[in-house]
Image 1 (cartoon, rainbow, N blue to C red):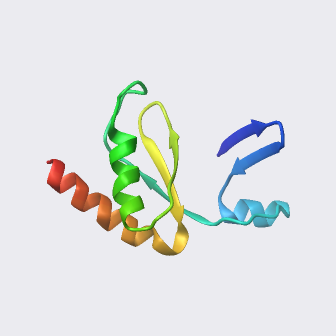
Image 2: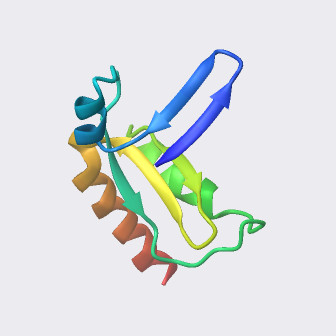
Length: 94
């Protein structure tokens, strides 16, 4: 789970089943993609490269950086396409 507190309110990133079970309303259903590379929190360029590849395909992407991995949240219905694009990106960087 991810929580973000802003002046306007609280944002929760939770599984759909949890939101439904708690009666929480939501307006965005995402597919979660975990990047399996270990990147330092201070590293430069990884997020930009990933975001650019997805943006070129018209796929929105929200990133949450964990200590060990970055987690991407993309539109649920385009998650498989996003994974394929990221695999291509990894092969080119390879």
